[in-house]
Image (cartoon, rainbow, N blue to C red):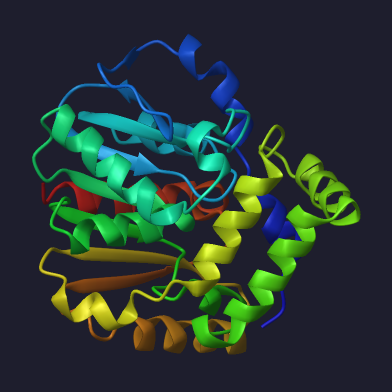
Length: 281
C-alpha cells in the first residue's frame, strides 16, 4: 500500500488551532494539572473525551463539536504536539504513560466511563482505555489495532525499522534537521517536538492490541478512510475486518472517498457517525 503525501499532510491538519483554542467561547480550564497532557472542556451534557492523532491539536474536532452539540467535550492535547513544550514526554516511554495520564484525568475529574473518541494514535489510546475499563464506549478513527498495519507492515516486521529510523531522526544532526524540516512543512504540526514525534512513531510501530481485543467488553465503533479506487477500497475493507474480528462488539464503517483525516475530508459523514455513536451514552 503506497503512502499518499497529501494524505500524510492532512493527517496533522488542524493542530495549529491549538494556539487559538483558549479564545473560543465555551472552553474552560479543568482543575487538573499534568506534565504530559492538557485538557480543555467545551459544552455541557454527557461526557465525551476527544483525543487527536500524531502531531495534531484539538482543533481537528472543531467542526464535529459544532455540529454535534449537547455534550461536554474534553479535548486532550499531548505535550510535545502542535506547539506545546514536551515536558515529561521528552524522555522515556510515551504511549502507555499517556494512557495512564488520561485515565488519571478521568478519575480526578470524576468522569465515570465516558465515551472516548480517538483519531489515529488517539485511536490507539482510546482502545487502551477501553481495554482497561476506563471508557464506557470507544470510537476509533482510521487506526488499526496494530500500528504498523497502517503502512502495510506488522509490529514484528516494522519494529526494527522504526527503531533504526527513530535513532536516525533523533540521534544524528542530519536526521534531526531532516525530521524538523518535515514537521515544519506539515500543516498543524508546527512547533511539534521531533523527539516526541519520533518516539511516538517508534512505539506505535511496536504496538499490537489485536490479541487483546477479545477481552473488550464495551461497544467499539471503527471509522476508517477508503479511497474512490474500488480495488484499494476492497483491500482496506478486508484488512480492517480481519484486524478487528476478535472484537465482538465492534461496528466497522468505511468512509470515503477520504484520506486519513476523515473528519476534514467527509465532515457530514463523520458528523452523522459521531452523532449515532454518542446516542448510546
